[in-house]
Image 1 (cartoon, rainbow, N blue to C red):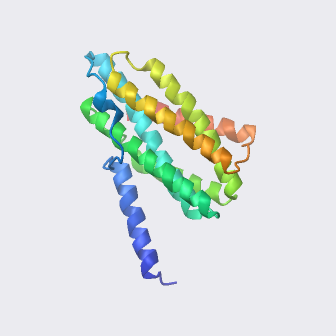
Image 2 (cartoon, one colour):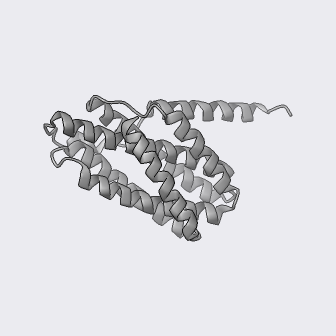
Length: 212
């Protein structure tokens, strides 16, 4: 089967977007919340810890981009597609902010970003195939877990690392809004077993991404 030109163009655009996400070369549409935060002094251990946490957060946004791209592409309702696109733009802000902060901390994005993106895109495709309600339910549960995760990071980040804290706080606000939007569009509740599997996968990813 020969692809039409629009299909080829879309495939090229998707590949370019994935490459930018994986390499941390995305651009934010909103100002970085860290711009107005004071630049606190961190010792070597604190800087390394902040970098590990922000790398985990960057990986989370790589996964979010892949999930939203896949779920948006295979969503059935137009309003659902629009919500995934809007949420994806805000997640791209998070990607840019966390990548910038990692550079400031003298660190780098995860070396396993291609793997995180591929796995998440496949998962998003599977979830989308179950229908819009289930796809939105997956978003709602994901954002609930991410909110808890970011709250935990706010407790772990050094108090003087105001720049990282400002980014994480804005990310948490955005994720809460994404979860509410998914529920307002008719999400279904995820089975308990699925929620526990999501938590287990997230824990594995966070453990690895903190170091690599």
